[in-house]
Every structure is written in C-alpha cells, then in structure tokens.
Image (cartoon, rainbow, N blue to C red; front, side):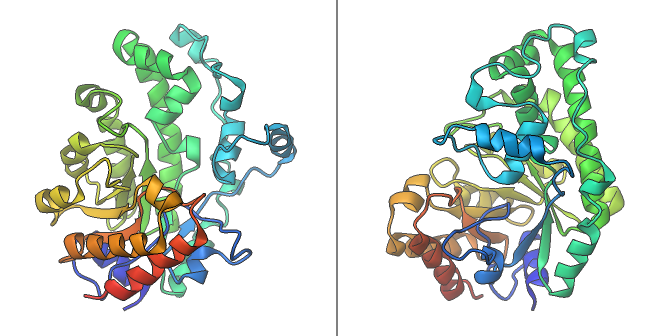
Length: 351
C-alpha cells in the first residue's frame, strides 16, 4: 500500500496498513535537516501543494527587512499574504479596513490579486509528480485568501468585525461575500490540480470554546463554507475536505460533518476530547493531529512524546480515521521530540 492509498483509507474512516503521519498541515522547515524537506526526510505520507509567491518580490523583501528582530509572525507563505493584504500586526491595532463604516466605502477596497495564473501555473504538474511517487497531496489556498473569519477580522480589526457580526450585519455579509469569492477561485484551482485533500482553515475558537456563538457561525460562515465545499466536489467528487481551527470547536463538529467535512484538525488534547469525537463520529469523520500540548512539544521529553503517540493510536486508531500529527506547531520544539514522534508513529502505527 502506498502513502496515497493509506491516507485516503484513513481519512475515509477505513483501516489502512498503518496509521499515516504528518508534522502539521502546511510545509515545515527544520534547520536541523536543511535543505532536505521534513516530508522526504521522515518519509511522511503527505506533500503540500502551494500557490507560488508573486513574481515581483522586492516589496516583500523590504517588508521582511523592516520587521523587528523579535517578531515571529509565521512561515513565509503567511508573511507574503500578510504583506499583500496590507495586514501589519507588528505595527499596532490599525488594519486596512478599520476605518470603514459603510458598504460604499468598502467597495473601494480592492482585494489582492492572489488568483493571477502565474501564481498556480505549476500546481497541476507538482501534484502529478507527487502522485507518481505514490504520496498523497494536500493543497491549501493562500493564507489570507483561504479563510473567512480570520481574513475578515484581520482586515477590519478584531473588535470592529465582531461588532459587524452583531450590529452591522450588511457590512459583514458584504465583506465575507468578497472574501468567499476569492476563496472559491483558489479552491477551484486546487481541485482542478487534483489535490487529494483540500485544506480549509479558520481559527474560530479559543482554548475553552468558540470565539463567536454557534448561531452567528451558522448565519455567516456555515452557508459560505458549504458553498465552497460544493464547488470543490463539483470539480472532483472524491476530494477530501479538511477543516482546521485551533482551540475548542466541538460545538461546530456536527455542522461540519453535515456540510461534507471529512477530517478535522488539530484536535488539541488540552482543548477537545478526541475519544468522545471518535465515539460520536468515528464512521464519518477522521482526526488529523491529536498529539501533544504546546508545553509538551516545546518543553517535554522524547519519552513523553512516544507515550502520547502510543496512547493516541491505541485509543483513536481503531478502524481507521486517524492521521497522526502534532496538535501544535513544532517551530520551537526540540528536534529530538520530532524524531521521537516519527519513530513512535512507525513503531506503534501498524494495524
């Protein structure tokens, strides 16, 4: 069984030969093994297809050089879209649309051109090349061109956008319609390129619960997300739909299953009860992640990581439905902990 077959079986809640593994849901860069990509170094089951950066990069490099040395905002793909959308969190609370008060004023804002053909000309060939190697391919829209809640509040400002959802609903709907159109184009490109897993992400939760009420999420985000998923499946009925949110989004899980999500991530063990989700949705919903808190990854020991991987596989792996991965970014984790994770996944993951 190759990695692509293994991932498809696991994410459709059927048992593969072993539990597939990844280190996250976007490409990782680990200085300890550079220039080799972790996906190849650790023989992971997923590769990640991304849009190319803009052809003209000088403004972006000026932006990087201007960042304070203690600022850590994310990977280069995220930083490129932050720059293109005018989102500069390191400069304070001002946002590109924070002063907008009417829809007429909002119409003057032109979304960045993330959908120019030169941004995705290589995608189909990239996906096909990985498929020929027998590995699964996950595809993610550009960071701020792939989210709804996060993109909207980054443009409007967090408090502004939360007020929009309650008191300025027409403004919120208009902005979300524009962002959704950009997302739909990007999703269409990825589905046509043949990715196995479409990665959708939107951090709508905090560690204890949702940031907004389920009612607001169902009013503003559920129908738009459903529309995006329908479009992807019109192009490729077999594409697997992945949904990421940090924190505790348990109250949205039934809705996500209803609109066609196949797998959720990262199912952080200090925020969500993965075993309960497995019991409730185990034949319809797969779990991607589940391993470790931020403290465990950054300050824990390899033996702690190995024990947790073993426990997750024993509790969550039965019958398929698990792609094991860290539940937090491993940017600052000791390399020894990452090695322990991969070794444990290999040792305990066979069915």
